Length: 102
Length: 519
Image (tube, each protein chain N blue to C red):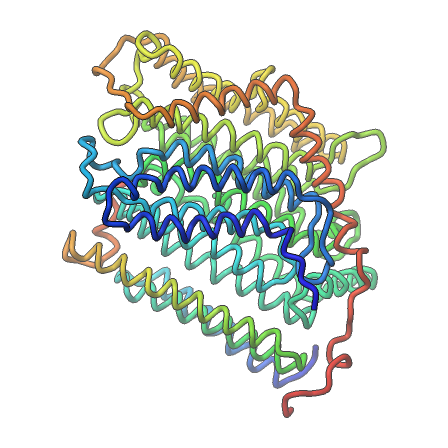
């Protein structure tokens, strides 16, 4: 596994994943937090496709199709949740949703 | 192409029932809607029978069927049935008057989908399948938490559970992508062969190590273990109590099966002096110890029973992680190994914790279940049977002899000692002693204190029946553990050889296929 082209794509995938992770931990708005996880998923997709091309089989690319489907299901769920929460408190700041502690 | 679907019988039954419940639960006629619990319960009984009758069949290509898969399906349908009984009143939870408009039968469809994912878990033989099974377990539980009851606490719990769940999914998927990159295939046989040759060569590439590490961290969320454990108390408290009972069993079992399957790919040869990648079993042990201590110590501070049981669930994950870290290596003369001890404990833990939650649901407190210690103070006088079943489940969680929880802890300690980890065994014993303090506080509140508030109990027969059934099983398996022990030890024994040596895997992949993509 010493292909410089592969490493570039892996670095891109890891960078996207890291950007998403930092966004997840620092953002306060729920929609931004959800978009951060989406960016993480895209980083994983880039990893999978890079490995798929490197190994010259299609397993990684079919994995990506399943990944996108599940990500879409989670996106619909996230939007449903966000609408539900906004109706109750008129804000999407996560700090407004921390009643339970300890 | 000869696909034998017989081995998927339990999952097919559960998913068809889920589809049926979705249809029936939305029917305009009220009498029809009310049949959804019955459909769910009957389908789980059928799935249990189907799982019981599964033999060692399978062509090894499309799915593998080993004792672990049978055990998994039995747990999913059996304990799943208990959770359905415990959540029998779920559609009326917010409305004690049982208004017909409030009836929500689709809850049971979500529950069945999640159980089907759990039952699928040990049958997968491909990373993509493993990912889909894990998500099939998780996504319905997000809906169950958020929509289970209409108050703000449930919605807060739902949003916390969902966002951290998406984060954990991203983390273990990152690990999966690296495992795929390491082996060049998503097939388990190919990945196992790649690990085998890498470990035989005495060198494990970083890509495999990082992949395994990310999988462990991501799945620690599902089992509520350190480092992703902190959501558990909030989510368990906020969710409707039947959903909490479900959460304490299904995602945790799914996570442990997934971890076993992933570590199985490495052939359990990571540990040992000088082995490449021994950092992972060491890490598992550290996580196990941290999980036990954090769960037990923080549980001491709780007054809310649901929060307390959440921390207890974290601590119990720690005990099971001890077994997993010890692994299936069985020294001569020992009847038990770490893996079968973990699997036994998983069955035992599910019984006792679901039993305890079912008793809480029966003893309906101010909200949907008895939540506060004051809610159940002195309950033994008016409802001796409910108090007794709660007490038996709690004594089992402590590990009193004569209950299944005692045997579970005993096996874990035995396995740790047999594999030459005396320190781990001592730490498990210390934690069991800490845990006794907070479980006994609940028992003391029920038996020694005077009643604080007038009690209300549910009229429905199902939750007390679930509590009674779980209690009887806790005692029965505590005295006659043979059946449960046989299942779990068979699953624990076959694991190291079945998948790995079953088939010499096709590597390298680049040579096997003509190049399909331009370089």
